[in-house]
Amino acid sequence: MFSFNLILLGILIGILASFTGLGGGFLVVPLLIMMGYESYRAVGTSFLSIFIISVSALIAHSGLNHVDIRLGVLLGIGGIIGAQLGSRMVEQVPTHIFNKIFALILVGLAVKMFLTKN
Image 1 (cartoon, one colour):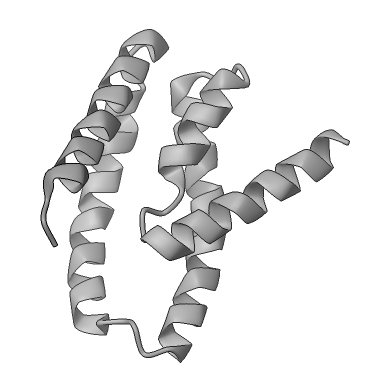
Image 2 (image 1 turned 180 degrees about the vertical axis):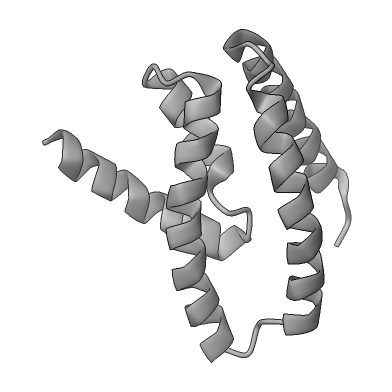
């Protein structure tokens, strides 16, 4: 039953990630932490699941001509460097501090999105 629930959760995260472009980590990381994972393991596991979800979403969005390849590659190059730095930094942050930082980032993004008139 546990695996089935994770698959259902993955379906929901896949829909939200593909729909919003947020990658799903904003859901996966807090859920894994609530399940008892340390922050560094939650982040690493999240990246694996998000990689799989992202490849699928990329294929779907490419078929709909929603992809700017040049922009994606440039952001990806910067992301490679940032990912190497961030993965080493997260090990140094205790889970309870990480949770607070992560929550502040999510709340800040939510407020900005709510107040932006587009």
